[in-house]
Length: 169
Image: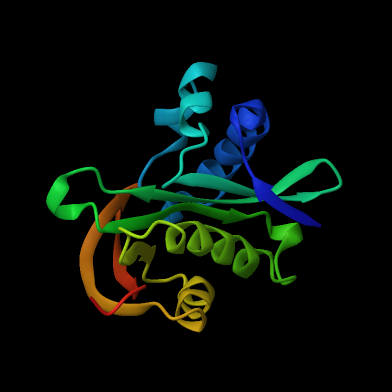
């Protein structure tokens, strides 16, 4: 297993895994398979463009992408001190080997490399106990719970909002 930053050249593998994740774990993502299945290759390549303050990381088994996570950044001036984790997914077959933690630590390392970023936020399905434990294990703290944050096939799902302070300032 190895983890590396994804680039536009990884767009096809990223999109294939993302669509599997959206289909298999719909309550883990704000987006849906139906919304993303027809994205143009250029849209995915833009998502994977290497930037100094945001990026996507992949876990590979041989040459197969088996896990992803992304770090985004707020763009408004008053919010630009915050980054956020999105798109975290590890295939069921690759779980239990620490890949999720390794991916998350890579994304947090990128966040820490940007002096202006003071905090990283994320949202996680309230029923995803393993994911919540992982986030807590690396220092994230819960700051709220949104009841009925997502409606999937007629069923409401709560989300837990978490943050990790990178600096005391």
